Image (spheres, rainbow, N blue to C red):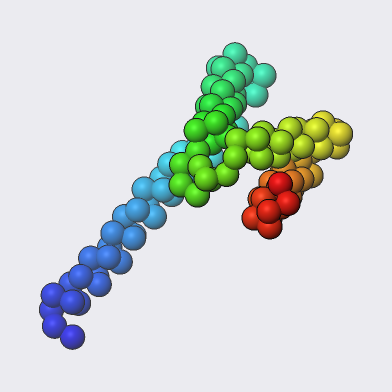
Length: 119
């Protein structure tokens, strides 16, 4: 093995170490201040609302303006799967797992039916 190849390998390991250290520093800082955060406080509620709003925007964009292979599926299939997921989510007392599984399942069934020419 020549020195350039060896240095390249050590350089990648060094980069991995630095990235791991940076991640650890932020996680350790978060763990250190987590005990001081009041979950009922105004700032925490504001950040929670902001996070939910960003998630709702992302999901809306994925459903209404998809990219890649999802853009080839009809909008109606995506909306029916979304509605099924919400209904199951509400029926199971706001449990996310059954809602997500049902939405993916309904979307898969609709896509398969369209692929076989039934719809």
